[in-house]
Image (cartoon, rainbow, N blue to C red; front, side):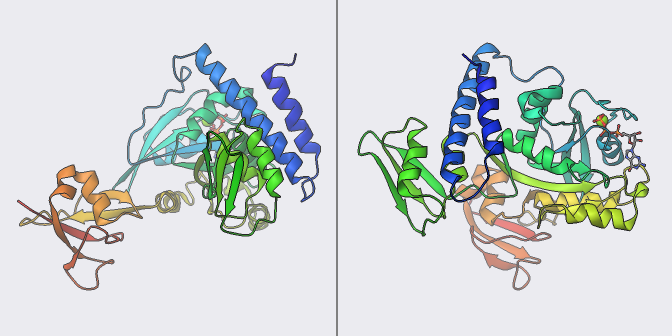
Length: 371
Ligand SMILES: Nc1nc2c(ncn2[C@@H]2O[C@H](COP(=O)(O)OP(=O)(O)OP(=O)(O)O)[C@@H](O)[C@H]2O)c(=O)[nH]1
Ligand SMILES: [Mg+2]
């Protein structure tokens, strides 16, 4: 009997050689469902085998307002880059696998403390454990954002890296699918849909759901669901986060080289060319990271005191007054009366607002509480 790893590899090989089109989607979906089930089984066994947490050299103590991981092939310049923007001492070298463990550094920018993790180079087969791939991907999964680093001379790198992350259950630059599945005791698999379904028939969907061992379930679809979406929702261990791309070593490239590599990147992904060696683009990169993490700075003016214009509060850029109150102290929500705002989100200075007001970067906020 083949081991789980062999079984997964066999099924993956079959997926790879199957053409992707409407006629094969259901078949591929079932194969992917099988892999998802086998992986769940494998993770369960591994969790039993070693209960001691991350491998040595890969235990990361999270710090700061967000964490970003550097993901790239060996020798693309990850360690050179982290040295440019943080205080981390990560060895660099002109040979592959200079970095062997996870090395954290902190970049302070626009009032935010952003933790950056230097990692060993990632190679093809990483998701199966090649080159400490499992340890690396385990760290990448826990981060707020993936910073892919490529150079202008290898247009195959990004697709390979991206595939390894996908195999490790990461879904980047895409929202979780609007698919909701609740297991039921009886009644079979019922599918309710708010939009037209063109990818799969109801019977094919039932088939995929049943292959996870669910005989009865309520499935609610708010999207035109693909087999991947069903499998991802059933598998449950997917991580949805953001990814950006840095093109390094532009000091060695012509503008044409850079344009050519750019043209191969997925549409709509944030991209920035830099040179970690000469420092070109490094200042822009700090803004680039900060902006893509989606932060904003909120200045606080305690009631009856001067505003603190030196140290803003760094919060997610989707935050409302209530979110800010909640980060400060639970009393701020419980005893909240109203707030006053001056700045980009205010119609006029010291506009009176409630808990659901959406704040904007650079706002000055004063919270008025009940006594
Ligand atoms: N010309 C040029 N060389 C660079 C640049 N960035 C890094 N290098 C060189 O590329 C080599 C590899 O750099 P590292 O920073 O060690 O690469 P790494 O991605 O950390 O490599 P691993 O730790 O092995 O995965 C070193 O010789 C660096 O000096 C760059 O922007 N331009
Ligand atoms: Mg390195």
